[in-house]
Amino acid sequence: MNTIEKYKKYVNTAFVKAVEPVVVTKAKGAQVWGEDGKAYTDLFAGISVVNAGHCNSEVIAAAKAQMDQLVHCCTYVYHVPAAADLAEKLAQVTPGRLQKTFFGNGGAEANEGAMRLAKQFTKRQEFVSLQGSFHGRSLATLSITGNCGRKRGGGPYLTGCSYHPAAYCYRCPYDKAYPSCDLYCARDLERTLQFETADNVAAFIAEPVMGEGGIVTPPPGYFEAIKQVLDHHGILLFVDEVQSGFGRTGKLFAIQHWDVEPDILTMAKGIADGFPLSGFIAREEIADAFRPGDHLSTFGGNPVSCAAALANIAYFEKEKLCDQSAAKGQVLMGALKDLQKRQPLIGDVRGLGLMIGVELVRDAKKTPATEEAAKVKNLMRERGFLLGVGGTWGNVLRIQPPLIIGQADLLKAVDALEECLASL
Ligand SMILES: Cc1ncc(COP(=O)(O)O)c(C=O)c1O
Image (cartoon, rainbow, N blue to C red; front, side, top):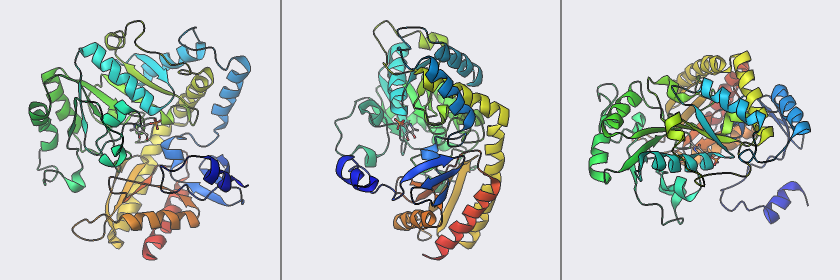
C-alpha cells in the first residue's frame, strides 16, 4: 500500500472534506516537495506554523543539540534549563507586564488552561468571545468558538459563553462603515454584557486577527475601544495569538498593532517553527492565582520544543522576520488589491503582514463563492502553489506563507492566482 492508500485505510480523516493529494516527503524554507519530485511554493506554512521556514537550520541544530542532552523528564516535576530560558525570553518579548508562562503542546490546550486561570484569578465563570472565532477543538475551547460549523454535533457545550459580533468590516453585522461607524461594534460590547451575560464575566477572548474565521482584521482603535468597556467591568483581555503570533502580522504579536495591554496571551503554532509547543502567559499576580493541583501537563514545555523555540526567536531577531513580514505583506497586499480591480470575484483583500485573506464573492450582494474558492485552491496546487481556504463560508483564500519567502515568489503567486481566477 502506498501512503495515500494507508491514509484511507488507517488514518482517521473523516473530519476533513479531503486531504490534499500531495505526499509531502521534504520541505525547506518556503518550498515543499511531493514524493513525485514536484516542488511547491508553500503559501500556508502548515497552517501558519513554520514562520521561520521549513526545517530552519538554526532551529533544527538547537533541537538536535537538546536531544543529545535531554528529551523528557517532565518540566513541571523538575527544573529544565530550556524551559526556564524560554519563559524568560517570552517575558521580554511579549507586550506589557506579561511575565509567567505555562507551557503546553497545542493551541487548544493553551486556551483551555488560560480559561481556567482567568476563572481562578477573577473568581468569575463567564466568557465573552467573538462571532466567527475559532479557539480549538477541546470542549471548553469549542464552547467559546463562535461558529456552529465547528460545533455541530459536539454539544452540550459549557454554559456562560456569549458571542459578540466581530469587527468584520466587509460584512459589518451592524451595516455600518468604518470610520463613520465610530467603532460601534467595539462600544456595543457594553450591550452584550448587559443582555447576554449574568454579569459574571472573567475574560473577553479574541484573536487580534481572526484566522480560521477568514483573516478578519479589526480597524485601528478597535481594541482600545474594547479595552475601555472591559476596564469599566473589571474583565480581563485574553488574546488568542495561536495563529496571529510570531511575526505573522508584521509584529511579534498581532495585539501590538493596538495600544492595549492584554492580561493573558496564548500562543502555539509559530512558537517553535514546527515543533509542538504552546503556552499562555499572564501577569505575575494572575499567573499566581493557580493553586497546587490546579494544572499540569506531562509533555508541556518539552525541552526539545523549548530549545527549538528559543532558537526560533533568536532567528526572528537576527533576521528581523517581523519587519520582513510587514514589508513583504505590504507589497503582496498592493498586488492583490490591483488584482481585485481586474477580478470581480475578489470581494475583499484584507490582513496585516503576511496574514492575508482574499474573500471571493459571486455578486454585488457578496454571495460567498465557496465552490470557486475550493477550485482556486486546487488550480493553484496544480500550478505549484499551496494555499489555505477558510472563513465562515469557506470562501476566503488564506495566504500565510513562511515569513522568509522571497518577494518574487509572492508576486509569482499573484500571477498564478490571476490565471486561476480567469480560468474559472
Ligand atoms: C486562533 C486559534 N486558536 C486555537 C487554535 C487551536 O490550535 P491547535 O490546533 O494547536 O489546538 C487554532 C488552530 O487553528 C487557532 O487558529
